Image (tube, rainbow, N blue to C red; front, side, top):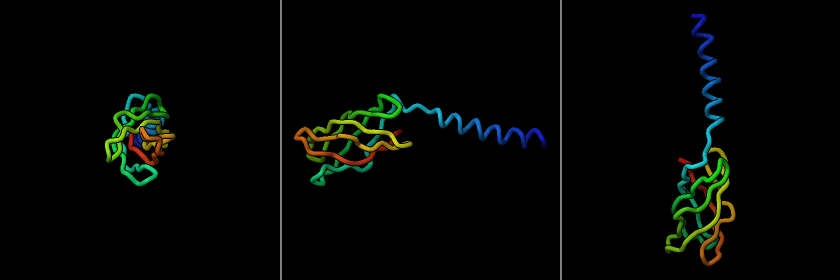
Length: 98
C-alpha cells in the first residue's frame, strides 16, 4: 500500500509535466466563432506554425471572401490577431486547436 501512495502522486506530477510540455506547432486550429467587423461569419482553419502562433489556412467569409492573418495561442484556443479579409475588413474571433 505504501508503494501505491507513492506512485499515485508521482503519476499525477508526471502527467502535468507532459501536458505542460505539449507543443502545438504543426497542428490546426478550427474557427469556432469569428466575424468580420460588419458581422459576416468566418469559417476555416489556422495552421500552427509555432507553439504560439498560427496563420490562416483556407479561411473565408460566408461570402467566399479570403481571410488572411495570424492567431495567437491561449491554452488550447487561439485568438485571431491582425486577421483581415481580402477587401481589408478586420476579422475577430477564436479558434480551437485540435
